[in-house]
Length: 337
Image 1 (tube, one colour):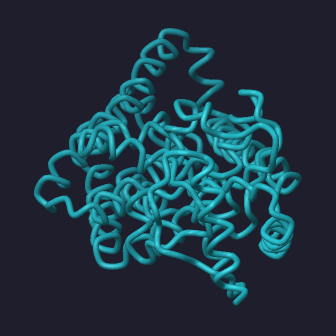
Image 2 (cartoon, helix red, strand yellow):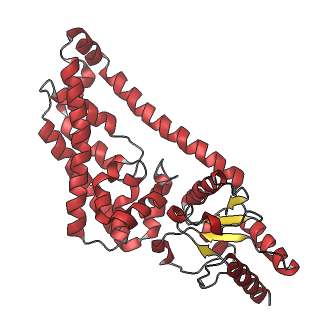
Image 3 (cartoon, helix red, strand yellow):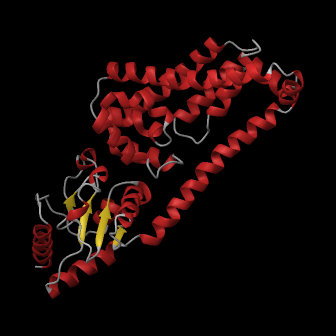
């Protein structure tokens, strides 16, 4: 038996537990290759699939319960921290909050299958005020479905390979190399995907001082204000419910439905509270495909504008674009006075 396989078999359950725990705590250590490897070895009865499953569930229980408690106590700050650690932060917050809004705790049943969603599902569940007993039930069910799926996929592969002694001997000899290539492949795919997206974000971003100058100039000239869209989720309003002058609240999942409200003849500025303005950039690209081309994310989002010391106001419902123009002009003039 090759040394790598012998070591893994001898410490398999501890390795599974620690690896999955580290990944679920937020570090980019993909555990799917390890689950597949464990499932493959269970086909030769070197490992017990049941014991491997218990080790994985214990790791998920500890990590998810920790993030649930942190999310309940510290809210959006914990979510933003996790998204910065995640390699899937392009969809991290917006997608998860959207799923919880539509499906509630059922989201936990499939969260671990979705990159980015698995990262922040537990703290957002805590942030929404879900009871721990309800969270634990759905989270354990989701963790069980996720881990069993990959363990049994590996088991199926092991059953097929074991029928060919030559192929099985080859894979056994180079098992460590195959495993490392799978892990590196997962990491490279996520990193490349993230970097491509963030490069597009950087090309479109607008600085807070640029937006402020645009708004001041429009207020003095009497021309229409930039159309500002607040993309924050309702949970993100809790720390500070104020908005930028004249901003209209439209959720990321509602943008396409309200596309006819958004003007084509002036700048449309989007802001959120996501790291690197991921939600704003994603919505900007979506609007570009709908023919709205003058769209730019605000660098730093809501927090960047607030830290710059620029005016924020209580939100006023405005169903018409014209109403948003009037509100924006009036609030800017008021702040100038």
